[in-house]
Image (cartoon, rainbow, N blue to C red):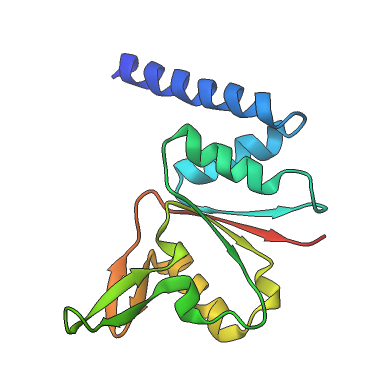
Length: 153
């Protein structure tokens, strides 16, 4: 048990060191983001544009070989743009589900305050319940699932 814990600690320290090589001066943000990932939680990153919020989240995902997705929330974004949509395939004569970006392991939701409440609700369901509902069917999200919200300062 102790060897396993030491191996996990070494992996975490290695990840922290590697990300610090890319994100200079953001040690606290890196540590808290990593903690949120390990706890399958959420992070609110608030900072001025161009300081590497996306780079931090992308580096974290890459460090653990996880699927990274980014959603730019705009006034015209629909809930199905977040969760995914079923599209009719004429050749197969059936509906095929096309997954939305919320089905990534690590999702950066940028500027959620700019979109409609209905679209925000699609994001919030995934954050709280760890699943989405599309066409009446409930789908579990990938594990681990971690959401980072980026808001303008």
